[in-house]
Amino acid sequence: MAAGRKPVDLGFAEFAAQLVSELHEALLFAQDEQETRRAKLADFAALPLDQFARRFVTNEQVDAELVRLFPAGRGTAHAIRSGAAYTPAAGKRAEAPAIQAKLGLRLAPRDLKLRAKRAELAATGVKTIRDAVRARLAEARLKTLRQAATTGMPRLVIDSGRVNVKLSFRLADLEQTGARPTKSGFAVPLTNLATLAAAGSGKPRYRLLVRQVNEETMPVPPTDGTGIGELDLTFKTI
Image (cartoon, rainbow, N blue to C red; front, side, top):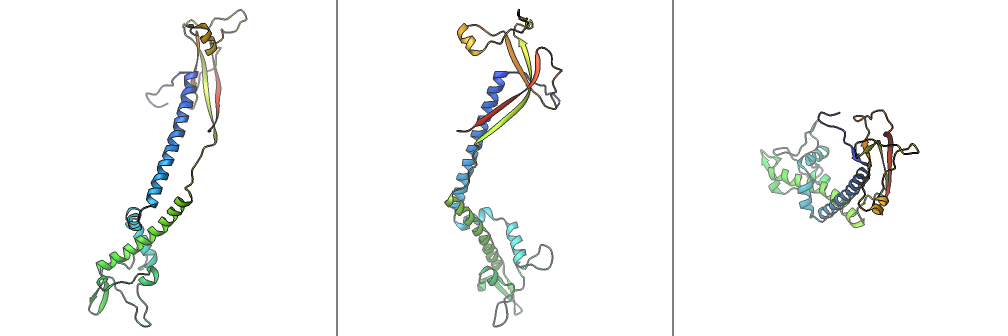
């Protein structure tokens, strides 16, 4: 058992009530969390493409896509960088890198710079290409999200369930005198709610205490006033 932790005895009624209360609270919290996320996804689906791209497509994802489209040797390098050689298409000469063929993007003169009759990608050109790749990645994701928002996002619904708890039971005498046997030899019956209501101010003498059983709280050997059992609670949402 963890240092400083001791097993706690609870009245059976309090234990069962707390179990049901916390189960109900957990279901309500899960439902609220689910609806909050659904509302957020609907808000994201309504974003313009450029805003969605800036928020949800990272630079690392853009780099990974550039490596896939325009690899440069081995590893994680790509050919889209400032100062990299660029060959525009002319006659039978193919464009290299094939930016227009793979991205449908035609570079403007400001995206290039000439150095000794050799064309290179300028910083503005690199940004133009990266923005195009970012928008391409965002468009596919946004399309899926908008389809889900239109057709209805899935909702997880709990129909029924079961909780099973192993408990040790102990009969406690509230007068701390021990359970006195009756003429029949059995312990005095517990006072239930109906008996209390009929008796007015009467109070029960005995109380059933429970303690959850697990590897850290192994029960002592059962005696006449103790025992081991299970609380099996089956529920259904309506």
